[in-house]
Image (cartoon, rainbow, N blue to C red; front, side, top):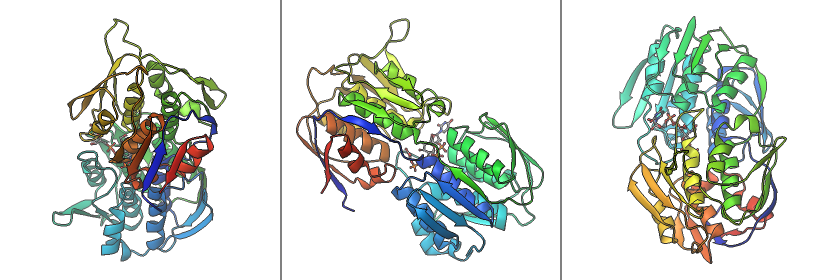
Length: 436
Ligand SMILES: CC(=O)N[C@H]1[C@@H](OP(=O)(O)OP(=O)(O)OC[C@H]2O[C@@H](n3ccc(=O)[nH]c3=O)[C@H](O)[C@@H]2O)O[C@H](CO)[C@@H](O)[C@@H]1O
Ligand SMILES: C=C(OP(=O)(O)O)C(=O)O
């Protein structure tokens, strides 16, 4: 696959789009197949780089993979090759995505040892693993850290034992990892300050269907009674809420009429309301989201008339993964908004490209950007740019689709990491985009 998109902006798009299965759910669910020697069938799998790489890693580690079609796969982890998990190849490959870190919880629970190479994923600031490792330690695992290689070695000689833990922060992948270790520990584990994203809710639902005993699902206190083994199951992924938010932003920015089909609307939390705060009209029709064609949209103020701030917060707050999209959409709104990215310190630097395109943005510091909407007084102009991370990449793609003239976007592997067949699906809506 080539790694450049060429986009000619200005087309109004029209039609229906179906969201892919959720990337960040898939990375948890696919790691969980390591918890049982029985068959697990997973459906609505997104066909994206990160997920395909995780499936490949599991296959390399000895999991039998039977990919029935691109969206459905049967896994059976009945013969794991533990030597591979210590190999240089595993370290290298798993370092290419963040999700690989979640193989550790299941491996530790089932085989008493695990290795966590420095995980990959977006370079959007420091991304520590303390929550994961301290959680495993509380369950009775010992860890050693190889400073040269950035490598954690975990061992639980006497088996894992349930414990109470108050997490330092509600880490999404950290909570998933600890839950997957605790389901097979002896006794009861209580995880307080747990992350509770729909991804986690889905993981717990899947684990319970495998015979785990998890209560408190959807809250920040999970209580897990350990069991001695888990059985196989079938699980279907939810629609990807980050893709859905990206499509809402795309419709508004390009003045397009789009229906997002089967959006899983009861799992979207505050996402629709955040876009409404930007003045975007959207209608929930059953499980679809209809976005009418809008010539303009006006950012709301707070009740006292002060400038709106949109910031990220652990679920059920607004996900940090949609702040770049909200930011780009605000550049063509009427009014102003302060975007405050609290969690990551390097996720807003892409705004320099939007400024080059003609947007009015003041980057106040690495965490905050003030956007003064152009109100469609003039269009953004196409430029050549490079995608720094997955969500900034899509934000730039949305900007390019709304801009005057041609844009070239390099490093689109960053987009392919999380958005399935994005060029083809956007072309179906009438976008002028090609891979060159
Ligand atoms: C593969 C995957 O699922 N990746 C997601 C996951 O990453 P991941 O699980 O790696 O992210 P974490 O939830 O651990 O934390 C993300 C960052 O936010 C900081 N932090 C976290 C919680 C908190 O209350 N305060 C705080 O500042 C952490 O220090 C870290 O820098 O969750 C992130 C936060 O939703 C998302 O951006 C990623 O897309
Ligand atoms: C930051 C993200 O992904 P990852 O954690 O895989 O880098 C994301 O999905 O927005």
